[in-house]
Amino acid sequence: MTMRTSRKMVTFQNAFSLAAGDREFSAGNYEVVTDEELVEGVSFPVYRRVATMMLVPAQSHQASSVEMLTIDPRDLAAALERDVLTADAFAVKARPASAQVT
Image (tube, rainbow, N blue to C red; front, top):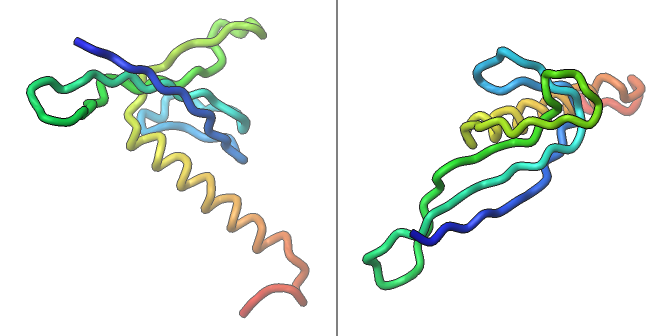
C-alpha cells in the first residue's frame, strides 16, 4: 500500500489542551504529522488519513525530549478555534475604552 506523510506547523497563542484534557501544553509552535494511504481501485488518486500526530515536549521533563502524540484532527481544529477565540477576547479587553466598538 502506498503511503504519504505531510507535515505542517500550527501556532497556539495561549496554553491549550486537547479533548482528552489530561495534559496542558504551552503556547508556541507545534509540528503536526499526517500519514495517509492511497485508496486502490479508483480511477484517480485518493488518500485516506490513517493517523495524525503532534510533536510535543516529552513528559520526561528533559529540555530536548519530544514525544509524538497521536491526536484526533478534530480535537486539534477545536483547540485552534478556542485559541483564536481566546486571543480575540483578550484583544478586545486590551483596547482602551475609547477604542472599543459598541
